Image: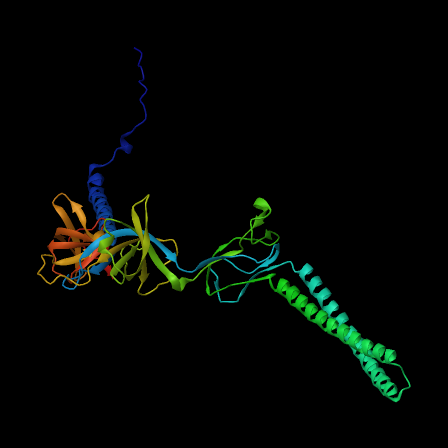
Length: 408
């Protein structure tokens, strides 16, 4: 009988995990998971609080009560224009050797703006002075000869009286004196003419220096060193006619075109509120200076010039501007207008127009009823009473109760 041995595989019983050990590690693992979850929640809450804790900055203005507001009779648009504006040019044709004017530079009356090539003018001045000196030297010679001729005439008169010399010799001596007197007068006139030529040459030399005719601001630099300039359009496109343009900033005013059918509503001295397109929330007190006494037949308009009651560095030439012509006196009858606020403060929503108010650092939403527009402002018929802090910029993403930083 043969006994067969059965080969057995490796014993894997030692690799079996004891259920008791598994039960001991499970609570630690759960604690770690809970801790990580709690930490993630804390980080999320911190980020949420940090984001929502920022206070957005908004611009606010006070709603104005309309008791002393004047009604708007007419609205118009135009541009800021200076009464004194000049393109400075040289009096002579010449080549530019130096330019001292730059855009934005403030210049005074008489300040040098540019210089032209003055070599020819200096040569002419020296020549005129030399001619004057030559004429002056001739005068000295003629005066010496005239003095001698007068002595000869005196002796001739004495000898003729004594009967020694003839009348003919006396006449010759007298003629010599008179001739020298005429030549001396001519020489003196030639000296005067030479002095005049010196003044002309000096003026030509002075014309090579271009100066500012009045105090103002340089708004344009029209010529460069090396270019030719001329007071007339000579030389085609290669010759400049101006060197710089200066504006008197103290003479800025508004020029608008008013339809001739409404010109009866405008009169000299009338109160006006001007609003620059660059600063729509800035109302500038102004007054009508003059009405140009002519009409434009093509546009059917009349030009009106308006003066600012107070100038400001923000007002620049050629800026666009809108103006509102006001009544001379406010209406005495009771008005239904409760307040005036800028147009930029009004938001249109499904429920109608509304505004955001800031009270005690928090946002409040208020529905309003709108009236007519007054320039850059709008009438509030209901919802405000005047004195409220209304948000005019930064309304995006605001919600009631939100904490904000108000700037006025």
